[in-house]
Image 1 (cartoon, rainbow, N blue to C red):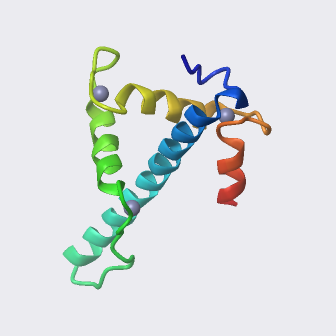
Image 2 (cartoon, rainbow, N blue to C red):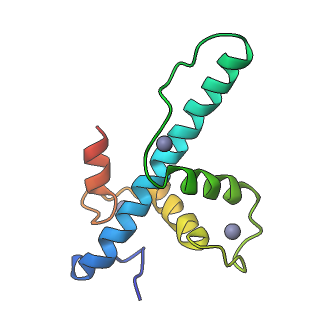
Length: 110
Ligand SMILES: [Zn+2]
Ligand SMILES: [Zn+2]
Ligand SMILES: [Zn+2]
C-alpha cells in the first residue's frame, strides 16, 4: 500500500499517479476561481476575463472539488474522494522541501 505520509521513490509508478492527481486538483481549484470571475463578469455584462479551460479531466476534478465541500467523510466511496482529501491535506501541510510527492510540483509552479 502507498502511504502518502511516508512516500518513497521505490514506488515510482504510484508516485506518478498521485502527483498527476495532485496537479489536477491544484489546477481545478484555481480554474474554478477563474470560472467564478467569468460568470460574475458575464452577469454584469462584461466580457470574460479568462479563456475557457479545455484541459482534459478538468471538469472531473472540478466536480470532485464541489463534492469535497459537501462530502460526509470516510465512508464515501466516490472515486478519488478519499485520496484527494489526503492529497490536499498533504499539499497544505507538507513542509519537506525534498518531498518526493510535492516538492517537484512546487518547483514547477514557481
Ligand atoms: Zn481547467
Ligand atoms: Zn466523498
Ligand atoms: Zn510533500
